Image (cartoon, rainbow, N blue to C red):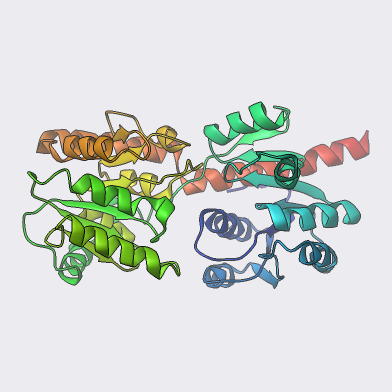
Length: 389
């Protein structure tokens, strides 16, 4: 991934934890790319399920209680990170979240190390305290925006100098999320495990069961599509919110959708799950920088229905690879799902070709990693040139 002449740095990424979230996955992806390129990758976090990927890749995990937003914890984490920096001779500190970012910024300054940030979301900044808290993510020598939506936000609301701003879109694993990679055996297992009826189209929303992910909105939309014959699957773990799961069950009963709507747990073979689906829905209520399920579904050649806010519109070609609906609009979402289900087989094949090509061109995990490692190299080369002049 790096040319022979590239510098192979020691990079410390700082994240709150290693739960299965967007910024955490990005940190692990970059750590894997660093070790594959012969660099040293260190990740400091409170730990979590993704830690096993770091170990498997040969990266180093340092357990630091970075998930806390308590000011005393943020302060005490400064020395912990300085110890990590000195122990591993870290050259670049890369922060991906606000609370750990403040600890990382001060640790990098006191250690004389380079400091980089990635901005994965738009955070509330309605008052001066919020703006000051958020500001750490624009303090990097380079500030990575994970979508054009985020880049525009950083320029317009935080005045980030374009010379420091870099657009590096998040990507998906195109080796795993490829129609050719899913065997018939995996497909049959998924159909059997979920007891899907033969011949019925499948509409799927894959996401943790959280209110902001839009499962309730999808059920309201499905209730408006009683004349169509399809199965609706809500696929995702409960994320510790049992009350929301009960609310979804109550909505299914209230709208008499038990015959067509099923709430399922986490799926450990998402490529096969996408291949089972006829339509994949992303209906989040909050604008996000990057919706992983959109690009994963398109990489599998599946039509996507998504709400039109945040960075979602960048991930699709509206009217070609996906159908857009207004945010928080059940009727609009129902209309978009109807259009997706009405596609002819020829139209679906044409859409699949365009969706796969578009996603491979713009949302490759390998390209995201290559651009990030090139950014690290740029920073160190500039520092070497400045020191030599």
